[in-house]
Image (cartoon, rainbow, N blue to C red):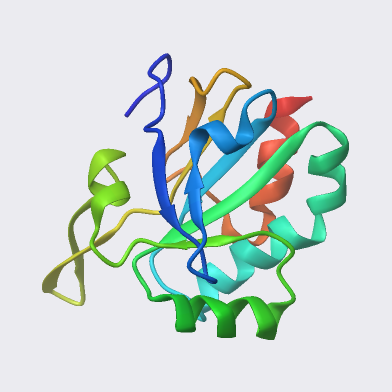
Length: 152
């Protein structure tokens, strides 16, 4: 998905099995960030950056929702361990990652596998994508600052 397109209505289920829809955020701006895996160093750094800047993002009218393909139990542990104040969608059937175009072939140490490309979508009050941070642009340790620089 790209700038100018409307995000899908059905986002998925969070760490508690609660259904999350785009319409739940009507009138609010949404930071929908996709990350490869709970509790890995880069993903933890990114989540903690968003956690540490959460109040600043909220003051500007943004809500944060993370998405990865791990299950609800993994997400609950990740949230507890890092005291994350925002929900994480458990996209175990790869529906949202495929819809958003962030699922594909990756390679590490010569091994090819399918996985999630670290990507962040800034979505406006009408549900339209207004900015996409691509994998090569995202600096995990300072990602929230990147978003705040874009917003301001």
